[in-house]
Amino acid sequence: MKPELRAQVQAALADRYTLDRDLGRGGMASVVLARDLQNDRFVALKVLHPELAPTVGADRFKREIRVAASLQHPNILGILDSGETPEGHLWFAMPFVEGENAYDRLERIQQYPPDEALRITAAAASALAYAHERGVVHRDIKPDNILLSGDEVLVADFGVARAVSEVAQKLTATGMLVGTPTYMSPEQATGDKAIDGRSDIFGLGCVLYEMLAGEPPFKGPNPQATLMRRFMGPPRPLRPMVQIPEYVETAIVRALAKDPAERYATADQFADALAGRAAAPPPPKPADAVSEAAAGPAGAAGKKGCVGVLVLVAGVAGLVAEALRSL
Image (cartoon, rainbow, N blue to C red; front, side, top):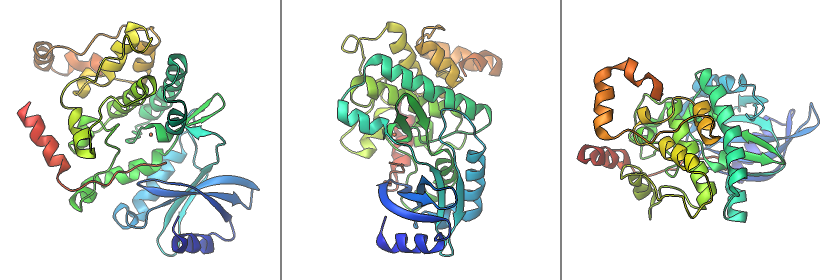
């Protein structure tokens, strides 16, 4: 955190928190370790970047943080406190988790054992299923937002990702694209306003693929190319290089389908398929997709990773839309 921002936040919260060391800085916020003076405990205090706060707005931020704070699930990192400083800095506090995030562990071990990758994914899917049932979509699922502490798996940053995503169109107009290209769903990349839980399922599929393969499913030499890759077909097969059952790879491919209608309808369905508890047919062929569209809603009903915002040059969404028109 920059010294000037740290001084302002510390002065505003002096009667509640004492700021300690920096924990990290992402695209949306800076994170510091802080001591909660009232409860005598350490917390992770996140402060939204000053350049984002005016566009997001205090009312929207506080509303989304309240929604996120209402999520009570063993695999969701809760929110303890939140507010706004006199200078307009937006902040919230979460429990401090001793451990590491899934990205840092991947950097350390290069590749997850399949059983561990599937265990982490199942826990994250349970958290997403719970949130989706309550109308909350994360919008920024990535390894950095999956925290690991012993056997505990916690999905973090529901509120801030929602708040920033609500004003994604305004941010894009100023040259910013909200999200993390490596894990962003095609519909989010093109600026689709109708984002639902299937976008999170795509992100979780990307995370699982990366944990198993040691590299993300869609990777380019720059952020724009990385975004474009997901429109060009499925990723490189995992088997036989990665020792996983065929049904696991089939489930991952379906989660990474370009069309949301071809993915799983719920995170629970994805988890069941990964565990071999449900069939995971491959995405339908184009002819099948046309038939389903003709059948209407009834025919389609069964098909239902520090903190991150990557700032890109304006025009990426237009490039992606142009690519879609050419497919």
